[in-house]
Amino acid sequence: VRAQVRLRRLVGLEEADLDVVEPVRLVNVMTDCRHLIQPLAASRGITLEFGDFSNISLFADRVRIKQVVLNLLSNAVKYNRAGGHISVSTSPSQNGYQRVSITDTGEGISAQGLRQLFQPFVTTGAGPGMGLGLSISRTIVEAHGGKTRAGAAPGGGAVFRFTVPSVERRARKNAEQA
Image (cartoon, rainbow, N blue to C red; front, side, top):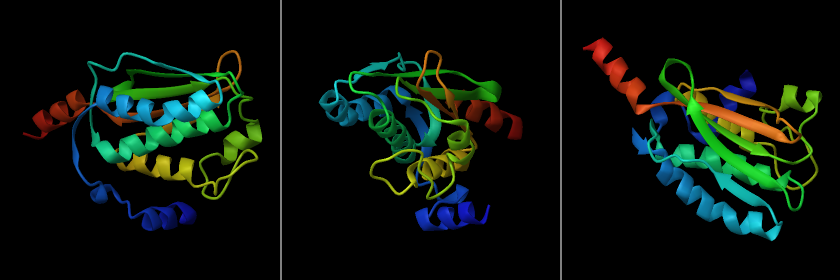
């Protein structure tokens, strides 16, 4: 818990510190992320599959949500097998949240790795990295009121999910407060 508090201070992120929380079209975030990650994926022969995000709007800090998606995508490329596959999808979650899922065909994550996954300075594999990306991503998602999860993907690999409030949730919450 103390490490998480220190990380929030390090990143400069508290709930009130999200820069601009506003309606964000998820398709725009995903298009930007796809363009940025495509060269890295292509260099390893990894195919990317993005779902249809055209009718989904989040109530979020666009830059911070993009940071989360890019971190999860870069990890999916880094820990995937050459010639692997990454799929990105979304679905409604509970209480007006949207769940974003990023699934890869890599080796997956051990049970021990899953227990430590979102802790600062913990890495699950060989390769470059300080073990901060997932912890920072979790901090960002939690600042939005969402949650992060990781697990085994059906057929092998890993799946990372996070939830973020939808615009509809925010409108409903505003109506209740009025």
